[in-house]
Length: 104
Image (cartoon, rainbow, N blue to C red; front, top):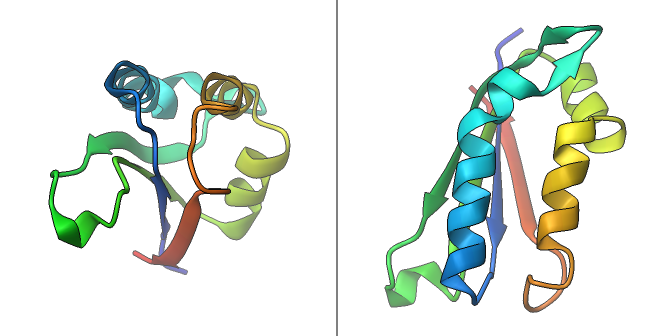
């Protein structure tokens, strides 16, 4: 089975909040634990280019998981992901972010 690459696109109008999200995602793969061990293969946050192609999305989170089970754990139980959700709550425009998952 190949890894699962997950991209999450956000419309965050405040550049300071975008930078906070970039910082959170830069260490997420080390800090997020499942059964006491890191389980996220790669995590990174990216600021988008100010360009019409970006359609107002200002931040992209990239995470890579070895299994759907790991990705589900991330969504439902991971404490560090919960911290990121709390950071972004009420600061994202136009509904929920767009999430795209694909084989890596």
